[in-house]
Image 1 (cartoon, protein in one colour):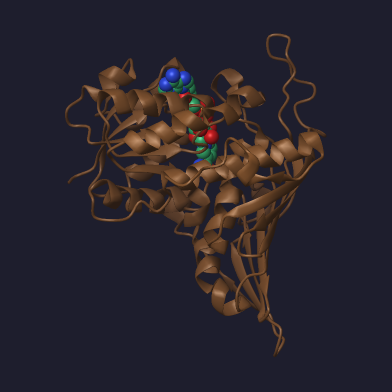
Image 2: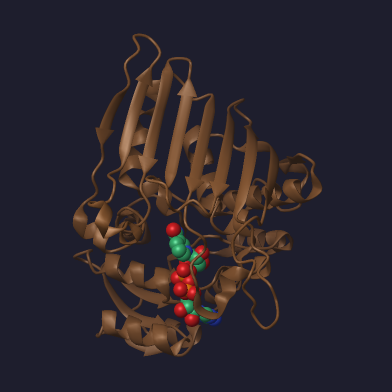
Length: 371
Ligand SMILES: NC(=O)c1ccc[n+]([C@@H]2O[C@H](COP(=O)([O-])OP(=O)(O)OC[C@H]3O[C@@H](n4cnc5c(N)ncnc54)[C@H](O)[C@@H]3O)[C@@H](O)[C@H]2O)c1
């Protein structure tokens, strides 16, 4: 099957997807639904051959389309999946987060049971070359991970169409909106599900002087989250969104009885000041306990892929695998349940930070249950 995409939502991230789909020799984009005039013009310029349509219904009516990408604002993802399910269910790559509100769980269960095609949740971090390298070497380097720490020190939230990301009700909250990536990584790396979450977080610095229709943004910009996993491993997330001066954006470390492995990932190269020279290159560092002697390797990313997006080439590698799954020739690597768990962990972390209590996932109404 030649993958022919229909795109739903084509702002900043949708256009990154367009640039990466263009690098796949066999794939093409046939139709785009993007309601904002400016973004629509940019998307049309990027893919001059694509049909620009006015609704999801019109997009699904384009017969050639045989797979979908949803890159609309977070709060629309679930309803758009439901609409697609009702009209013409096709294989779909849906941007994270899969959903935004705790009360959405029954709708998710119904969709999971009824959707007859692959749903792949976009979790780009898994596919960043330095992160993938760290994951592949982690077992040998650590002898079995007992502690996993993910630190993200980055720039504040960017401006979005209609400023949807300034409010928790649209994004799901910071620990859902962006940290679902890191909760997904924790489950993926530790091969276990979370049992209990404790967190502290809030809005310390960013967006406090902004106002939209008289309303001040309520999104958080910093947090600590601790997660206990069923396997006995524990993980921690440290998020700071007023730290863009740092050389590396993500610093991930895993430690076990035999040693430690780390991965240092730079932020988007376009934000690195030219007067400082070339942007930093990702690193993976293995530090055995005995004999001691840390070993560092640089993991450069293909410059063409760096140019095509902000995510260290991962958007390209994810599409490569998604089109195989869409054609029935590969597994769905980030499945519906993975996307659900990642949001549930973010919701639990936010609940913990707001109540000052640890949250046991099995006691929530929003964590996934077995099918
Ligand atoms: N995986 C990642 O690393 C990553 C990075 C950035 C964004 N994202 C995700 O991508 C999605 C889009 O984010 P963005 O940064 O591109 O935001 P954006 O505001 O730049 O783009 C969203 C686009 O959706 C359009 N839109 C609004 N209502 C729509 C509707 N009803 N149907 C279809 N489109 C609609 C908007 O006009 C806008 O152009 C979000 O879910 C975000 O969380 C993921």
